[in-house]
Structures are given as structure tokens and as C-alpha cells.
Length: 111
Image (cartoon, rainbow, N blue to C red):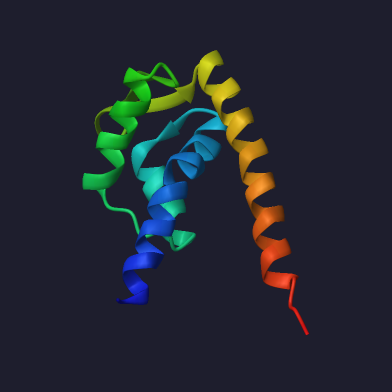
């Protein structure tokens, strides 16, 4: 078993949460999401991001609008819906609980 495989699965597990967090700040373009995710070492490619954005859109968690661009064709900018904000709120609670649980297990060293 390779540790890299487990690391990839861990990242995939929180990718949706991270994407919703990025979008929660306001309108965001997919390339900007990719840039931030890459900077955070989430290692995401377009082939992963776009299907996930479509799935989140189909689940009514986000919406998009087209905006004219000075550097080419119009761009699709994503925002959270009210349902998406509620969903993200629940994910934040779950994340806090997971971090606390994981920290407890890591720090609970038996003598």
C-alpha cells in the first residue's frame, strides 16, 4: 500500500468542502479556484474541478453567471445559493468535529 494513494483519497474527501469555502467569499472564476487549490497543495486539475462544479450546481448548492472578459470570451463566475450556504454551514460544523476528534486521537498517547 502506498501512502500517496491514501493522501489523494484524503484530499478528495475534503475537496468539495474547500471549493464551497472558496465560492462562499463571493463570485469566483474556475481558474481562480484552481489557482488557490493548487497553492494549498490540493493538487486539482480541470478534469476534476469542472465535473464537481456541475454536480454542485445540479444539487442547487451553487449558481453561475456569465461575465464579459477583457481577455477573451465571457467567463462563468460561481456563487453559492442559499441552499449552498446552509450546506456549507453544516460542513463547517462537521469539519470542526472531525478536527477535534482527530486531534483527540492523535494526542491521546497511552503510557
